[in-house]
Image 1: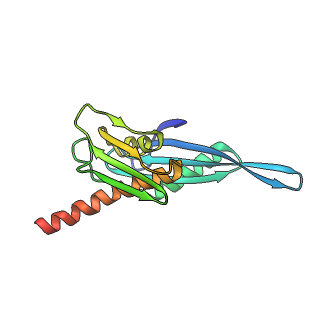
Image 2 (image 1 turned 120 degrees about the horizontal axis):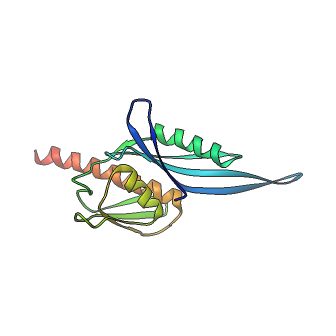
Length: 163
């Protein structure tokens, strides 16, 4: 986590913006190497909505700005019970697998930097997590969001079945 900012949105809601990763990428051209930057950003409202975005540009601030725009477009709803998640789940994306477990109040977020960014942005204050596979930040963020999204889907399905 390189940067943590809160910004006012046009609708008046405050979004939590976290820069998870900034990566310098190089391309070999006729005159030498040309460097660019790729940024991974997580955005959440602290109340159950979260999104991630990837931006690429020749300068870091530009790539972060592009990533923020992308993250705001791709926000999803997440189910939060009190300050944690309702049950244990494993989120999967490519080779990254993230185990998310509910925790009692006062535990805090026990997680690596990429997972922590997502959980804090969405508003989860107590959770236990473990990366079970790849620890590539992009895939870890995607797996975490996938797991959180699946919680909502499973919970809704359970409510339909059990009345």
